[in-house]
Length: 120
Image (tube, rainbow, N blue to C red; front, side):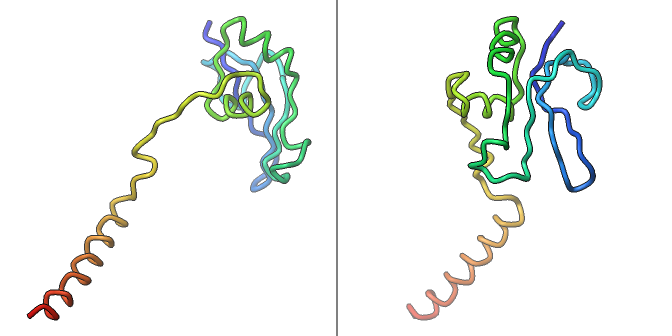
């Protein structure tokens, strides 16, 4: 059974509140879980201690049993010092989108045209 440590969403529309849960990876996001390990409230300030609360001992226990944290939970665990920081490389993330590339090409063409006129 593939185990995951992930976020389960609660709260109302536009007011998210997440539970950090240990679950079978085949279960739906907000479906059945085996154990609630903590909470995450993204509406609180980033430096607030109430923003992320988790039972570190239980998380370590699930990790030792082979549970895999999702990307977001892995970042929370790194911040809490439970796991080591991984190096991430996503070169496409920093790359501008299609429309931005087209705008940049048009701007470069416009900037190059007056420079050619001045050279003549």
